Structure formats: C-alpha cells, structure tokens
Figure (cartoon, rainbow, N blue to C red):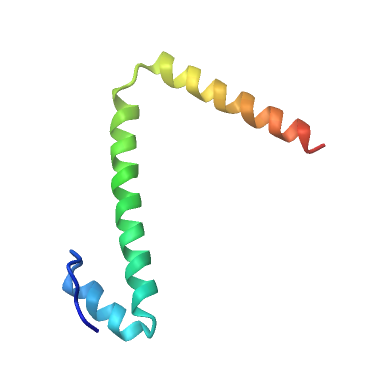
Length: 73
C-alpha cells in the first residue's frame, strides 16, 4: 500500500494494510480522529457558556424534539 501525503500514525498504516480494505479503514480512522477533535472543541465551547445559555439551548432542543414526536403520532 502506497503512503500518500496523509498524516496517519504508523500503527494505523499497519492495521490498515492488514485489514484487507485499507482505504475504508483509513477513511474511518481519519473520520473518527476529526470527530474526536470536533467533540473536544464543542465541549470547550459549551464549558465557556453561561448556564443560562445552556439551559435555553437545551429547552430549544427539547421543544424541537417534542414537535417532531407529535408529528409522528
């Protein structure tokens, strides 16, 4: 398997090569890495918000969920 200009650890390359479907394995590994980074950044943003803004956002989300479940009845 040729290494192109992708920043992935040696361990991931070895696992990908052994997986039988290296492209899918690497794509999933990269996706998971970026998802973790986005989740970490989102957690930092939420931690910086005042509790009242978090409560407002949670109420807004609950309202959307309530409306969507009513539509499905």
